[in-house]
Image 1 (cartoon, rainbow, N blue to C red):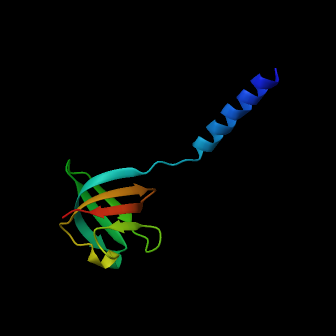
Image 2 (cartoon, rainbow, N blue to C red):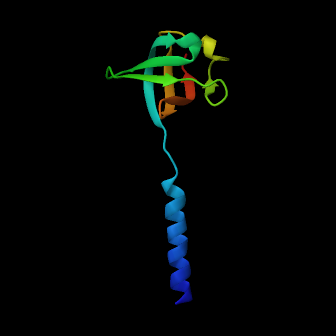
Image 3 (cartoon, rainbow, N blue to C red):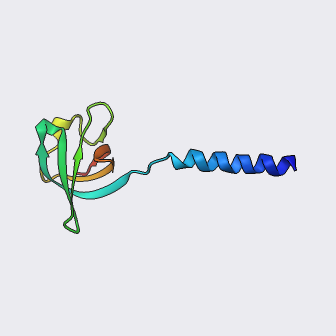
Length: 93
């Protein structure tokens, strides 16, 4: 009986811990617009869909460029974003 209760509580704890995990979306495409002095970009995906994301100076990880000011229209990027904020921006060559 104790084992069943222990197992059930373990499953419940695991379920609750995963419920709070948010998964970031990913978009691959080309920067079509840089706004607000590099604090926001619009990415046009290959299918034509446009995604706007905000860029944090402290929370957004940049790969392939040194700073937000290095982001330019026409660059190929892969952006992981969540709730409208970029988590990671990878700039292709």
